[in-house]
Length: 425
Image 1 (cartoon, rainbow, N blue to C red):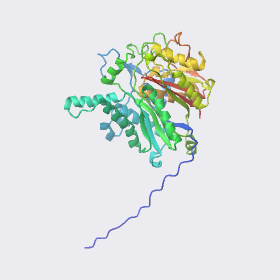
Image 2 (image 1 turned 90 degrees about the horizontal axis):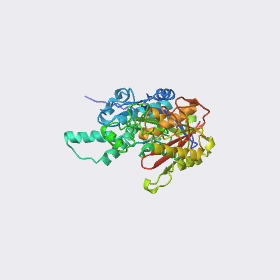
Image 3 (image 1 turned 135 degrees about the vertical axis):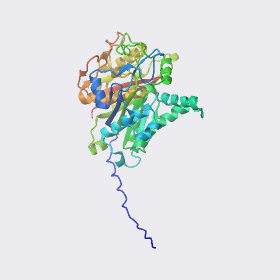
Image 4 (image 1 turned 60 degrees about the horizontal axis):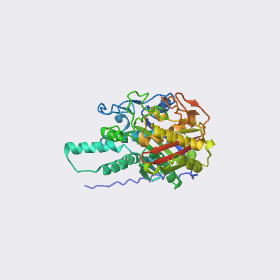
């Protein structure tokens, strides 16, 4: 018996076409959103313009024994409809939200990740609170089954890497990756880190932040800050810049953006929402130093980075802490840069709650869509700015406006400040 081996020769796959020359200008070509007042970018944006709130009583766990019982939860999120079954056992709620936002952003940008050159794309995101749920799950496993002890620091660090890594692995993005942990300011810091990678020649980045800590362990940590609102009426719980402000509401979700070189995006026929024109970060001295907060400095430095003047800014998306002292400090910063009531200010996060690392990227998405649609979204529920907050706050209803440039402000617990300027394409 004679066996004949048959050899088949397969031509090597064609190498991906080289990327078009870049101009170093970071353009946002895709947006993915998971937010308490809407799952998906256009649903969230329509609800935001209509003033629809996503703040309601907590359902992720029983909050009856806690003084704060309201939160912004992403509605109608069924992981099985968005996440491959193989990933469900190895991901937690926050990572599933992030994967969903990344999928939407990539599809919105028209990116075929399989066609990208090797190492041409990466993932740089922000996180700050999502590790609580992961850590709680690890501790529960330890308590119920025993096992190797893992420190809280190790759990958080590993979780952050896994969250970004899951996006990278699922989409075959082998370029630069990283996680920024500067609380609410982290989302802007992550986008800025992505901008730096673009300037080094990377083709595109998935960036921004999605966060979630709606679990008992995370809730206890947030309560310890003393800044959570204990109001039971969703319409009275989170009132930034208002005389009645008594704290904020926590939420989950955020936004992931596709940031790529503007010239390369144009060459492939992509549509740009706008560009990341300027950015700066500063750090406040500790409270005992009695130093002036440096949020205004961050705004001025971002303006300089963008080659812009205060009069060029058409709207400010505020950090909106929701406590009297922090709101007053932010109003002081805005008026120091622009003057009293000199520029429209809005805080659409009053419809979602503060989303930790996901909050500022969602504001960047809102600023870009506001420029696209020439309308400023409202700040809901706030009756009006307090006398010591002399800002032009956009309240109750959306405000049509000519918009080309917007400033996004963010502050993170511990003294982090960040400011980012987005500009029409």
